[in-house]
Length: 107
Length: 187
Image 1 (cartoon, chains in turn brown, yellow):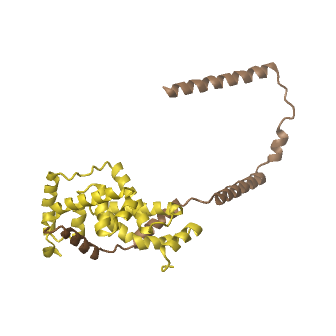
Image 2 (cartoon, one colour):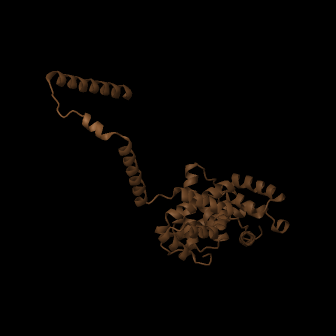
Image 3 (tube, chains in turn orange, cyan):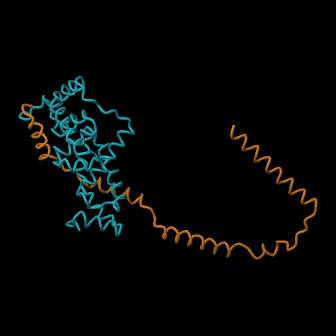
């Protein structure tokens, strides 16, 4: 470098001979990623979910003997002391198991 | 549509979410940006293209925030600069200080490179790598892209005085690095 302007000359030459990079692959790659990341609009998401739920409900209703199940449910419950004790015992056992599992996993 | 201005295309993307319009914007600016990022990364083509891709994706996401006060290309460069800084920070890429020893070794390497048929662009990119990221960006935008100090200040988000200092220091370092370059032999 003889003069300070030689740096500028070098950059001028680089600018004048700057290569052009083809957009073909690069551009399509960018747009593909953008399309993949493009979030589904809220209304579209809700509509799809509602449609799915409705179809599911319709299919279940047509195949599942819902009326038979409803009639098989007893209309009256008699809660006696034995049953009450049983339920209390069951809840107690569940609580102990849950507590033991939680404490063990913390260790 | 290809004759539409950047501003018109941006409006189309923002209002109608038109990917094709954004595709035209990418096509218009990708080559310049990819070249600049090659200069910023020591001609690391894969890294430069990854950063350019991330820049355009980020630009698409933030297009609604584009004010239109600066040129679209300047806005893109600002995003690219931030991407580059974050990348180097994450990669814990230590910026090479322009110490005498390093300058000497680089000068020797450049002298070796210029004896082969590697082109000016790669040699420039290689020598630019010796500059810290900020200096590299400021020098490239000023000397290659011919942007004003004010535009560089906006892109890099630094004061005008700092831009001038960065450019002067960068030029000084490059002058030492490229002292063995003989354009008459190679160009």
